[in-house]
Length: 373
Length: 212
Image 1 (cartoon, chains in turn orange, blue):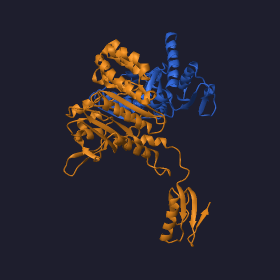
Image 2 (cartoon, helix red, strand yellow):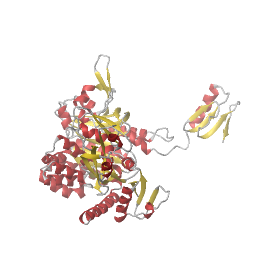
Image 3 (cartoon, one colour):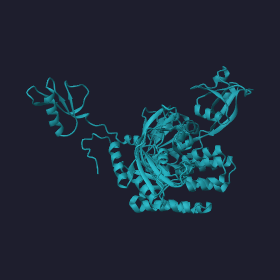
């Protein structure tokens, strides 16, 4: 069901939001509403999971240290406690993080979903399908990149990198920096064949069919056929659903290896300079939090979607009603009749400067309306 | 159309020449006109000159699909971009330099003057060295001479400027050269064009490496 928006009173990202929630609801996801605060301890224990450091903290009335949520996934996982089957929830929350550009705290609106419990092939495919459909809702050209953390971990393992080089290596991978990978491996005296395999995989980009032959050879060499099969099954599924030309394999999509172990993905919408959707399966995180089951989910940054709504509206209001000395009853009557014609009406005693209205109507003393230019 | 941000100055001109030699020429770029944007619709490229330290910002934010940025800028600003190719030009290094004969006193906080705040902080944080960072915008070499700082972290090309001022490099942090960088989103939506440019440039770089 679409929310009627003929008068454009809703912004683009707001209509997208209602479409998304409707979509998730149809797939049996229930809305999960959280408190804005969480105990700080949760984030300290899992601080690597958070992409950026910096959390707003404060002391609660009972002396406990609390935090404004920098992330939603952790709280959801902690609070979903059903033992059997799967639990599916979606959320729309504000999170608080340090902006990289300004170095100050920012409020970011995030919507997304989490599927926790006994995750099988269907659950993974469903999550990916919803991710693609979410991108589709932006009504623009879009693209989803897929990767598998299992393959990346297997490729990095024989390099036996030190902790310091490891994080430098992740940066190189994120940037598809082949020369950087080669240089780091040389400095660390890593196995040459392993370094070349990693570099080759990071350089791959394209449709699953185009990338598969090379990938298959490399994956067989490091013994991760199972992960590759899982990845290709998901890619095949999305192809069968008609999204074949919307997906690519790209192993520069990296989420934290301590938490994510399976499929990871990142979605892009044309006209937005950064990825708008990130997600993956995080069984390792579940294990870390003491749960013996799996989890998969994704989040969409809605703020970036507001970049799409760049066309300036021609008018601030559809109609401006200048009521002068008319009584409140007369003004209300006139307002209601104008509202029936649709759109927004602003009532003002005098004609304000710098207001752009489609029509300007003056309410006369005899109750009639006179159109002004 | 692929938008390409070039760094103003000698390096940018060198990089543009590489694009031209790789088949993406747009002769108006080198004209001394006041125009800001230069287009060659046939080749599907549009060039513009920006301040070198701004190239990464233009690319990260998607105003440019591609750009040429020094490794120093990439390390300092850590933009979320793809680093597609080492262009092999603009070679120099990020280094620590001090007055000749300088000996570091490990019992004191080290005063470091630099334009590259993050690089300097990361470099010394990695060895748990407590430093006092002094951010300057130019004439960094003056700082140790006037006793403003103990050392500087700066780009060293030939070392001549240092030598003339009685300074000497004491440590290399990392080597620098110009890199071809790409916006991540553009890489998806203009993949064929961007890969075309990258391949042409890579062939050129490899050829020059073999026949300098």
